[in-house]
Length: 213
Image: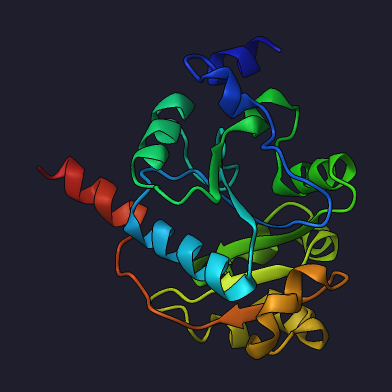
């Protein structure tokens, strides 16, 4: 599609391919627009790698976000470059492969990942600030039933795992935080809330500060 070519303009071919992974590995999927990426994202990735015992973490820079205004969104190439610049852990694989496929929503992307990587243990990773609105995502219940989910604590969102619609709907599938290392190997739905250090940084605050300079 011509639109997809425009999105992928300037992106190196290596970022438009799904990262290499072997059967039996445990991989975290950390998706977002990363506009811009910052140390708060890095902290979430670091906690996920350590607490979930991951072999890899795919830092999935998305072409856009259906729930947000993307008219001022920097190019995919720029956001990938910025993500690479703040990452130095070889286990983190920055990628924009979603731009190569006709997947407009997270549920579609996860289904494709599942189909193409039989025998790999995946876990979806998201910050707790996304938990409150998770039920607004397209096919959110299908997402929860595709891969286990690890929710990483974020400032002001610690109680969201108790009050969110997702938490209430899948309360029966909640796994104790102490069992997080086994999460990726559990059959979905399964999810846990991981407490830990929290960064006050947010992409929205950074963008607003830049506008006011």
